[in-house]
Image (cartoon, rainbow over all chains, first blue to last red; front, side, top):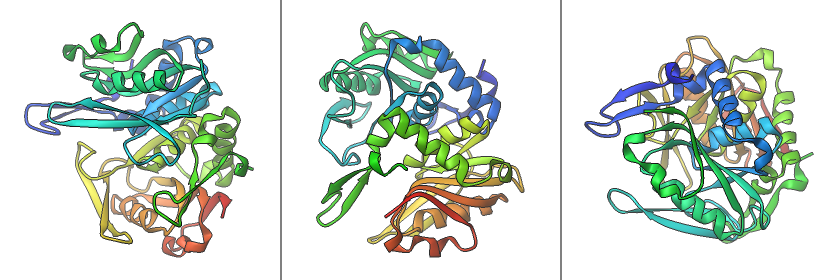
Length: 169
Length: 169
């Protein structure tokens, strides 16, 4: 149970939105520990080889999980941040578009990947992340989130990749 | 020794720069493990209460270190990303300025903080980070970096806060 560590911030980033603030979870050793153990238990660690996190809050949970399990970590980043050869994917936002990138040599062909992000909202970012991982020849086996906003139906964009959340709103 | 996991990428982000790519380090379980253990050994964990990392590559090493040691993690973020009340600090770049923020309730008064980032270059970002931590009443006890570009003399901006690097170029 991590609910007690999440702070509701009203009208952020704009009026009418209740933002789920994860910083109280991170700054509490017990909260951080529960979230990493929760992610480790959500999907059998033997079913994947590496952990992939999406910039930048996916880095927070993804790297700690990877280190906890003795696995490697793959960052998916915003455009222009990764220095080597990349694959990129553009996806739609409420207004406009966004793009994320992955190094083409980030995972060996056929490598099994656990996808991690802090929040499942509309699912657009993770859908693009799944496309990127497949584009470089790897296999996304599951998606893990700390918080899921179920009223936004983000799961429907993830296809047949199972999704797990530590907390559902 | 982590040097073997760092990839030199020439002319990134612009001509003449040799960029130190940490992604091979992250994606190798042994490389990631060595870097976290190295950071844990660089500064006595009994000398600090929490780990603070600067967005976004400081999140990668900082959170894994915090979880490894059973401590909490404090994110310093780019402007407009933290939803609660913040303190902010603007610092100079080669061209223009940049700003970073911290939640005012991120660390209790007098709390001892280990600062973590992936790279010590000119030191401007970490200098601003030290100011932020002090501004909210906490005490930065040391700075840790994975890579230090010593020819840029970033240490001179860190004042009397000791700096440790896993690899120096």
